[in-house]
Image 1 (tube, helix red, strand yellow):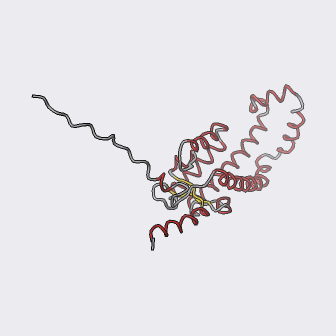
Image 2 (cartoon, one colour; image 1 turned 45 degrees about the horizontal axis):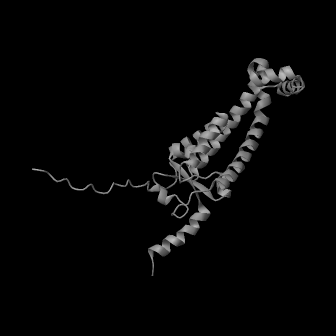
Image 3 (tube, helix red, strand yellow; image 1 turned 90 degrees about the vertical axis):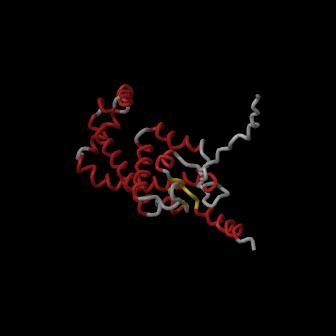
Length: 216
């Protein structure tokens, strides 16, 4: 007695990520484009550098009273090609005093950047001053609301570390994910489960949503 097998049904289609329909140009929360995010970042970076310079102006010479003379000697020594080559490959071994000064200045800038980015994300609705100028803000991809304090601090920390601590590798970790997701999330966005939306586009999307919900 032969048994008849039912014909195979259609292959199951896996549903896409619902966030892709929310965080898209035609969705209710359009993600910010790279160009406008880059502009907001440049504004933030200019502010961070300015504040860090003011802090260093007060603290650097207290920690390193001979910093000016060390820097002047460095400028003279860099005219020697052999010295310049040694500095490129081993700054700490060639000029440890200058290396310590540069490390102090970089540490101050990184601390200021972390505090600045984390404070904006955690306590000001996901917006830094640069983002506010460009009408951008971060949201949680879990709640679609403002990032939590913890998420904001983590996002600010990840962004700062990637930008200032790993050189080209850090920048690549930030930018490459843009090529592989439809929500225009960068590396620190994915790791902190956040996204950046454009409020100017959000205002344009709201009337479309209202008209589709109320056809009469």
